Image 1: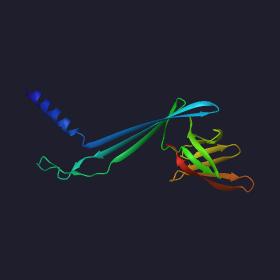
Image 2: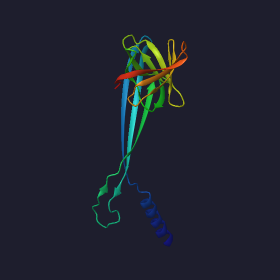
Image 3: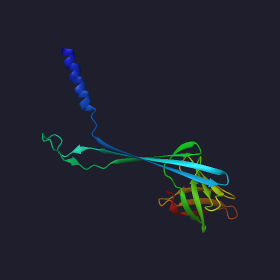
Image 4: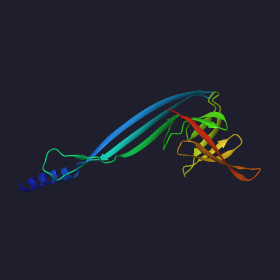
Length: 181
């Protein structure tokens, strides 16, 4: 009998210790896009999962009153973006798809199987590809040029390439006009 009482007391103690004082809010948004071009129809599925975890703390936690005041604590927000393009699924940190202005010409950046493709918005012809490197920058391969690029805080693509005639580094900017929704 003594063992049974000790086991029950141990169970209640561990349940009380493992009680969670957190408020968790999860939100998931799935977007499906279909793009038709000269090579056929491509479907892109993007799922954004946002999770907010907020620790719950009371103003006077040890008081004996039943109604306690909850302190307002900041929430830890985590965001996970999963993209499926032509059956290939991968995670990305941010989606830079949208319309850009590069040297006075409008172009569109879309997700592809392993990175991004820059296409002409009317003809859907591929103008360049972007492939992410291990340090978070991108190798941008165009028809006659290879550049290294990164995105600034405004979503603009900053490109750096070498001018073979002057042997100097040229910095160019593809300005984001409108992000893809």
